[in-house]
Image 1 (spheres, rainbow, N blue to C red):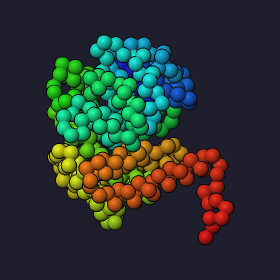
Image 2: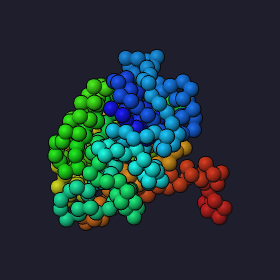
Image 3: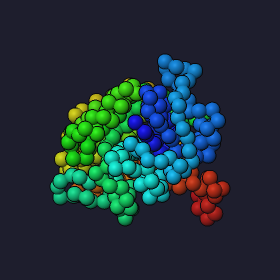
Image 4: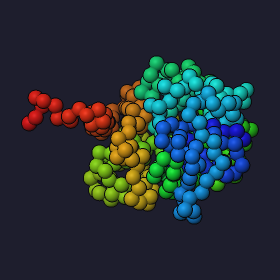
Length: 340
């Protein structure tokens, strides 16, 4: 299968790229800067528990989407806020039957597409302002996916797998199609678990439970999953935030297959893992706070469910992001006249 991974030099994209290439697929990654140079010069390296010295696959790396050509599968392994600027270029990759799998955390831009009910085709403005992405990408091409593995980028072109191999997928209308079966088999052959789910949206909320709590809490406190779950006050805060999210999801006919406590226990078992948002804080990168928190608050307003704790953490995390931007641009975090 010909596969293009946009963001293939990042943690999850790189993990996918190496494994899919080693399984015999023709994989091209779109990367930039030092990461692109490293992959072109030394290859894309994946460090795993079984291969601490690193393994590589025959991965091609390019800077521009226009350099890729037509592929069978496009994997969008980039954060939600990174998609809008490049979405217009994706059509250059599409043949008659090309499938697109967005792998963003949070509420995806396609959430209300190909879904019956009162909110059909509603645009989630937080992750898709003015519906630009929905207008550009054909929803018939999209298959949903939830990303469970944890991985980190330890150097340009070098990815370390932390834990997990599960990438469940699902058609937006809940059907089981030949193309979904084929992609599931391709993922399985690469060493991943990729079952086809009839209700991919409920699975999104299950993953989001953790993302909307542990990510911002870790960014604000610099605590790992283990520390957040074992500290009584942050554990309770996570539980309260999950409860607000659950109340919203129930209004959208979402069911949760595990309890809040079990979800928190699962995060605790991961151990001293730094969330992706904490990694972004430490690297001075933009935080995906809108996709993980802003979008959920927006849906709360849509279905008239109050979200006081989510809004409080959202406010703190957005300020943190502004402080990071100010620090990068050399602006003093305490401005003249604001000292106390």
